[in-house]
Length: 119
Image (cartoon, rainbow, N blue to C red; front, side):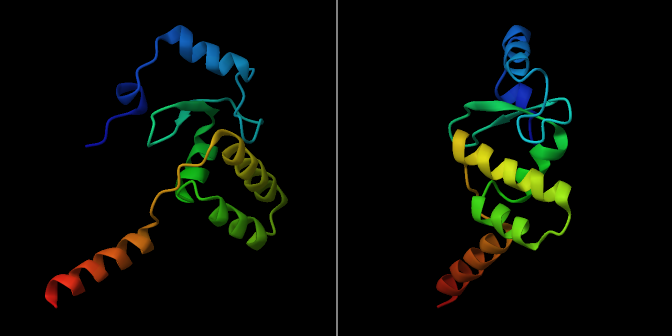
């Protein structure tokens, strides 16, 4: 079972309010919705800022990989999504990406490891 961010990186309420207050309560990526999630670097635990749930999921689904966000930007025809992808790329460039292994990379790595064990 995964713990929530508030359990893993507890902040006192005033710190959370301060972070969201710096952003006027708005998401650091889309600036259209209220910030509800604290985005953090998975390696260091450092909080990067407040995001709406949709933008937090957006960068999470792309494994915080700028090249995957750029590919999605190139492929989309939706101007709203293009805006969000551009802002997400800039956000990760400024605050630091924490690239993670994609599901297909993990599968390839595990297959290679199994082949090595079998040999």
